[in-house]
Amino acid sequence: MLASVRQNLQGNQACALGAIAAGCRFYAGYPITPSSEIAEKMAVELPKVGGTFIQMEDEIASMAAIIGASMGGVKAMTATSGPGFSLKQENLGYGAMAEVPCVVIDVMRGGPSTGMPTRPAQGDIMQSRWGTHGDHPIIVLAPSSVKEAYDQTIRAFNLSERLRTPVVVLLDEVIGHLVETIEIPHIDTIERAERKWATEARETYLPYGETDDGIPAMARPGDGYRSHTTGLTHGPSGFPTQKPAEVNDMMQRLLGKIDRHRDIVDDVETVGCDDAEVLVVTVGITARAARRAVRQARDAGIKAGLFRPVTLWPFPENQFRAVEARVHSVLVPEMNAGQLCLEVERLSARRTKIARINRIDGEAIEPAHILSTIEELGRHG
Amino acid sequence: MPIAPPWSQPVRRRPTVMAEGAKIPMTAAIEIRLSGSGGQGLQLSASVLAEALLREGKRVAQSQSYEPTSRGGISRSDLVISEDEVDYPLVTRINYLVILDDVAARASNALIKPGATVLCDESRVTQAPSGDFHVRMLPFAEKARAVGLERVANMVALGTLAGLSGICPRATLEAVVRDETPAKFLDLNLEALAAGFKLAEAPVSE
Image (cartoon, rainbow over all chains, first blue to last red; front, side, top):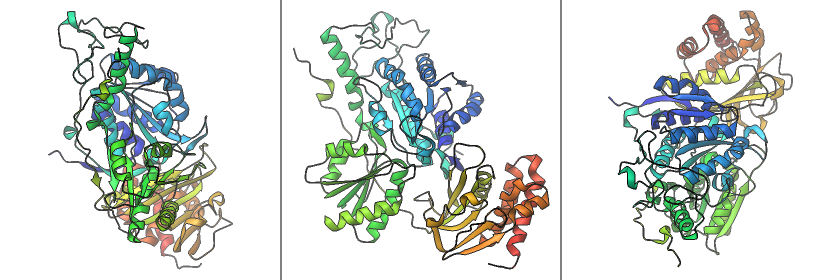
């Protein structure tokens, strides 16, 4: 019997259990509120499955450690919050450039700087996309429930391994610390993706060569392939190059590889989008508030809809444009001074009215606040 | 020579399945807040209640708020209880509010639903909220001292809350306390819970 188990589980713990279900066998981290329960849970659970847990000396070293572990062939993860996420950015960029699969969980708290450790925020929406320097590929998944924290952490590993890229799971403090009754599926029903390992002739192996799907096969340590890994711009051999044509080829493949696989990357939840006139776009706990507000608005006869990018980056442009074309107003509630709304504004037609709700006082945005704004937009539409 | 970027080339694109949220749960939820000062065991009593409700087949969402100190400061743990999946997991209209310390006395005023039940510790809460709801001043801390330790006032309050509201059978709560609290405190916790249920039976004096 592959029965699921119903239990009360915390969002952070769900990330840890999801990681282990996905095959994660290495965790390095430096505890930071409000993400520490992820490290705690991994410390308890990893040894049971023969995995390794290391509490590193700092955030930078933790990021370096998971990249190293992953290059050694093990699925690896770390978790942090804003201040630590800032510190990880340099090595996160290295992971993107060297195409090393790894998963980073960022549980957002009040910022900037050390901000408010125990209070929620959604201030890392742009940092999760553009935190490290230079053009780089990245995937960011944004769960809005404990169940989704579990599922999306598994998905993060699968995308990371398939596409050889760091994947960020972006939670806010509310979802990280929220306990919900969920069904954990039987471990044998979990779909796990494995990395593409080099199997071709050693003589012709190119660690960063062009392939049909844009994803080069990785050389498993000990298999005897010649491989070179660097954060410097490299050619197919992995060795540094500054030849414009080689640089261009490499960068185009690197930046294009996520787009080539949008069929497995994109994920959105929509509610009432078929006939919506007022559309709410948001993520995380704010999306839970929005879902209630949309339901209440529809009960009151206002054609409201919710568009929730479960895959936040790359933003699901096509799906959004298709829905946006039919609405007259878009509302973007978020627990920051205005970040997700920038992407929404970029993608919206000129005629569409864009409204914002921004809350930066360490409290969640309430459904009633969203509802009253939907009502206002509905009246003036 | 210009080089065509890979992403400009045609790509097989499967349309993303847009899951229409066909059924949005509509069940009326019960909202509970346990509040007081950090270190009073509010998170523990909330998790005991959440686990007991799980065993009763309910669905819960439990959230918390605390300050970056392990003792003192305002602390609260909230539960939203539903038969179905909880749509919005945070409290917005509290049905049952427990206040164990003055620091939390007024903090929840805006969220108390008309007709709600508010249970305050009579020795540690001097500024109980007043309004369109029922306030009861009860000797949680005193009863806890009577069973041996003031720290189990959280369990006394939990017993009274469960007794008055009928949200969770006593046997289930006791079973969870047996399974999930430290053996060293087991008898103390069970006695505190019993004292709480007894308080719930006492005649109302508002």
